[in-house]
Each structure stands twice: as structure tokens, then as C-alpha cells.
Length: 447
Picture 1 (cartoon, rainbow, N blue to C red):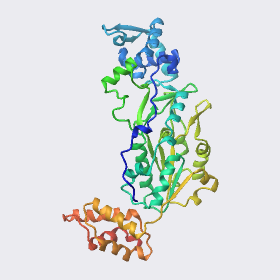
Picture 2 (picture 1 turned 90 degrees about the horizontal axis):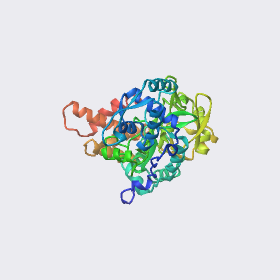
Picture 3 (picture 1 turned 60 degrees about the horizontal axis):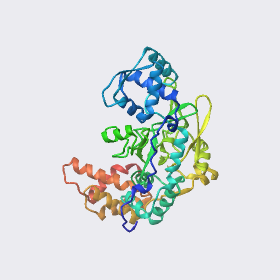
Picture 4 (picture 1 turned 30 degrees about the vertical axis):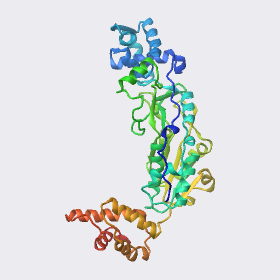
């Protein structure tokens, strides 16, 4: 793969505009009753709390929280326990007996306590602002995440348009030849060069709270203004100057990988019957990024059932989620879905489904010259000198006698050679004899 070197990728070109902090409850898209209940539940669980800390905890500017505090004081449900000359942000707030009773009732209705949700309308609008179809991608910017792979030019050139289109990609071919590595390289490009996006801690739809931000799946953008450890950012949030809406988290574009464990239930809202709020499904958390289904066709759910679930989202770029009372609401399906499989696509799905998977990239067994490049690259990585005699032996003994070469053989065999050297306390090196020994162990069942 020959590419001209280019200038470093300007990540900011792919970053959407940040959501602006609300100036009022109306701009926040929340009712006074909702915010009052959230305040009461927070104080109920955390005890007496300073106004500044309360605002930071529920991720609303203090000028917005003040409206709820004023209402609760007038209703005799909250009282001020003291403060200093800094002002209301330093007041210490505590529940009255009446406030404690109302907090308990609110907890029964919904036990969610944390960052205030954004309205579904704001989430939808932000999703379309940061859609994967808006990412800049050129051969030069795509080269870095693929630099460790040996690919034919035509294969590399098929990947770029797929990323630019933001449509689904089917990567298929025999096992061990780099399908997963290619898919993950696309993910690395998206994650590192796709710019930052914003996801809410939670949003509210049909009167229900759905959590979105998942620290186990979403990588927070370093030095982002949503860091609670940054004192300067905290002040800006409180004063509502030069900051983003703190209900949103600035993250790298997500790359979510799933394999044989994927089920249809994982693509629906997860309802907690005790706390009475929802967690967004796994693919939903990939909006703005990549959802990689590795080893497609090996899931418990059949490929047909899986694609039936997604046939309209793949076409229309939106999905529907259903809450416990049966009400449905529309959400964006703005992600690049990659299917990676060892199986023949025609054995998995029919032509109607294949038509909806816009890009198909077939990966075949490496030719000898490609195999040698991969082999020598892995040898260098492990600190070994090239040894053409070792490759000659593999072709004489195995590949010329019916075993199909696999790119992954290079790594696996050379790591066995490394282990043999380390076990014998010899310097790590490569020879024909060592390859004979390593391959006899690794490829014995194919002999």
C-alpha cells in the first residue's frame, strides 16, 4: 500500500458545535416539578449539601437550579442551614420533614438521581449534527491506522468511501486474514481522527429517563470541559460562561465491538423495575461512531432475525425504542455498522438484505509476496532477523500441499518460536529448524 505522506489530521474539522448551557428551566427543556423532585432526591440521598455542589451534581447551571430551590423553600420542603458571604451558591440546603416525605414519594416514582436529562428533541438534533456521514476522510488521513496492515491497494481504497458514506460495511473472507484487524483499524481512525462528539448523561422521552453515557464504552475527551476535577471549568459551569451544557459529555467517537454474545434483547431498552428508569441499548450508544459485529453469523440469534430487526434502520437511519407502557419514540440510527464474518454472505442472508448493506469488502488468503511481507513485519516486531528459509519450509511442507495460507499464521508461528527461545534461555532468533519445531506443534492437526 503506497501512499504519499500528508499533514497531520485536523481533528477539530470533524468536531460538532457543543451544546450551549441553558439560561432557564425552559431552555433546559425541564419542568419546575421535575427539577424540584431531582433536587429533593439528591438532598435525600446525600444529606445537607452546598448549592454549588448540588448544581454540579445534577449538571445544571446554578441560575437554573435556583428556580427549583426557590420553589422548594416557598413550599417549606427545603431549608437553608447556613452559608457565607459568597452568596446562594454557598448556602447549605437540607430537607424539612415535608421535603423528606415528598422525596420518598419521588424515589418511588423514579429512583434516578444524577445529571439532569436533556429532552429527546435536543438529543436528536445533536445526533444529526455529529453524524458519521460528516466525517472527513482521505487516503492520507486513513493511512496511519492501517500502517501496521499489509493490504492490496484496491482493498484499502474500498474502505475510504465506506467510511465517507457512513453506510453499513460487510467484511468477509476465510478466517485468520485480517477482517477483524481491518474493522478495528477503521474504528481506530474513527476514534482518533473522527473528532469529538457529545453524548448526554441521559435524556427524557415519553416521561421516561433513558441513560446514554456509559464510561465502560465511551472514552472521555482529554482536557474536556466536562471534567469535574477542573476547578476552572467548574466555575465556568456555575457562572454559565464559556462552557458547554454540563449535562453532555465530550467523548471520542465511540467504537463498540460485540460478537457471539449479541442478542435481540440487547437492542432494546433495558428497564430497571426497581429504580424505574432505562438504559439505552448497546447499539444506540454507538451513535456518532462505529458498531462492529464481529464473527457475524455465530450469534445465538440468527442473521435473518438480526437483520430483520435492523432492516428499516439500515435504510432510513432511524430506529424506534419502546418504553414499558408500550409507547414508542423515534431515535437516530447514525452510526457506521460493520459486519465481519468468516462465512459466505450468501449463506447468511438473502439478496434483499445484502442490498441494504451498502459496501462489501472481501478479504482472501494472502499471496506469497503478501505473506512474506506480513511474516517479516511480525519477525521485526518480535526482534528477529528475516529468515527466507523459514518461509520456504512453510510453503514446501504445508502451503504447497493443500493448507491455505493465513495471515494470522505468521504471528502465531513466530510467537511460538519466541516462546521456544525464551524457554531455552536462548536469544530470540529465527531459523528453519525453529520453524520446523514451531509448525509441528501449531499445524500438527493439519498434517
